[in-house]
Image (cartoon, rainbow, N blue to C red):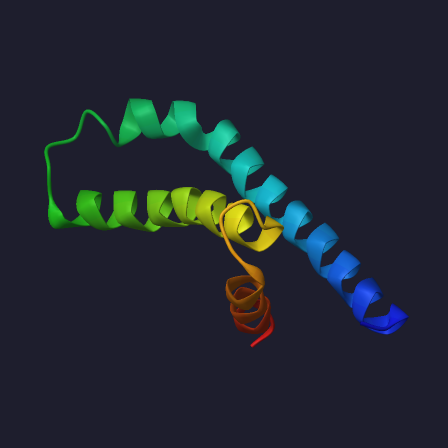
Length: 87
């Protein structure tokens, strides 16, 4: 592993943290509006799509972050996730 590769991994990690921080910050800011406007409405396909769109990314990023950081994955899985995140 050369110095350029380590630098790329560091940049990737910083950008990942920044993107996830923006995602969670947006969720925190808009959660009260979601509760007051979306939750009281009757169930519909639009409401289902809203929740899928909002929360699959929310919880998926937690899992992806843990995998990339190495808490749940071996080196092969991290390599695949690293490649997928840049493609």
